[in-house]
Image (cartoon, rainbow, N blue to C red; front, top):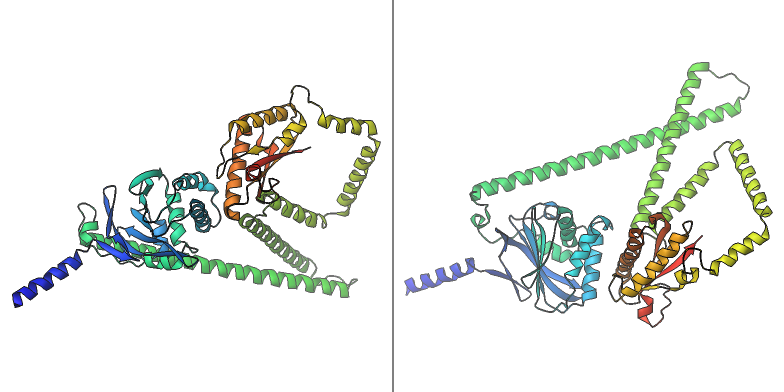
Length: 481
C-alpha cells in the first residue's frame, strides 16, 4: 500500500514538472517556442485590458530570464511575443492601437521606420477573431517574423524596428502596465540545459548571464554619473552667468552715479568689465539657443493639426529674428525702412492694366498646355477606405496637374489631404500623411521640384464631403502664386 502511494506521489510530481503550458485566463501558453534553430522559454505573461474589456493574453519568450524592460527592448537576442486573442477585435481598432503603440515606443518619432510599420500593419488586414494566435519572433541577423495561426505573414529586417515593436509592450508608456509587469516576471520553468546554446554548458550559460548583468549595471552606473556631471555643469554655468549679470548691473549703476569720474584702475578694470560683459553675452546667447531648440522639440512632438511642424518652426525662427533685429544698429533699421518705402513707391507706379491682365489670365488656358487652372483646383484626388494607393482616375488627374505645373514653373501648390469621419484622430492623421506622400511622390517622380509641393494634413476636419464619405477621402489642390 505504501509503495503504491509513493508511486502515485512521484507520478503527480513528475507530471507537474513536465507541464507543457502555463494557464492564464483559461488560455494555455506553451512553456517553450522554437525560433529558427533556437528554443525560447516563457518569461511571464498577462492579460491585455482596454476599457475594462479583456482582449488578449500575451506572453514573452526569451533565452534567459529577464526582469528589465530595457534588457528586452535593446537585446539583439532571439525572443518572441505571443498574443492569444480572447475577444474579437475590429481591424481598425487593432491598427489604431498598434499605431499609437509605435508612437509611444519611439517618442512620437516613427519616420525612420515608417515603411516597416506600414508592412507590419498590413499583417492585420484580415478580421481578427477570438481564439486566433499571433507570434512576433525576432532572430538576430534575420529580423522580426510575423505569424498568424502559425502562418508566416512577413519578415521585417532591422534591430531598430524590433526595438520599436517590443517597445509597444515594454516602453515607459506600454500598451498595458499590468501586462508589462506580468511578462517581465522572469519566471522561466524549463531547465537551463534546454536553452543553452549548442556546446555550451548550463554553468557557462549562467556565467554569461551574470557577466551580461554586470555589464548592464556598469552601463547604468556610467549613465547616472554622466547625468549627474551634466547637471552639476549646468548649475555651475547658471551660477557663473548670474554672477556676471550682477557684476554688469553693478558696473552700470556705478557708472551712472559718477558719469564724470575717471574709471578706477583704468585699464585693468576696463578689461575686467569687458570680460564680464562678454561672459554675460555668451550666457545669454546660449540661453537663447536652448530656448529655440526647446521650441523646435515641442513643435515636433506636438505639431499643429492643420500646419506642418516645419512651418511652425519657421514661424518661431521668424519671431526670434524679429526680436533680434531690435538690437541691431539704428543705421540698419533706417536702411530697411528706406528700402520698404522704395518698394512701396515702385508698386504704386505699376500700371493698373497690368494687374487686370494678370487677373484675367487665371481662367485662361496656359500656353503650351490644354489644362486650365480651374481643372488643377477643382479635380480632387479620391481614395478608397483605409487606402493610400492611387486609382486610375487619380493618376489621370495627377498627370494633368503635372502638365500644368510644368507649363507654370514659377508656381507652387498646397495639397490638402482629408479623411472621412471614421477612425480616431491619430489614425486619420497617419493615413492622411500616407496619402499626401503618395501624391507628392508621384509628382516628384514626374519631374516636379519637391519644394513646389507642400502637403497640409487636414484629417477629417472641414472635409466637404458631408455625409458622402467617398467624397471626404481626398487630396485637394490650391495654387500658391
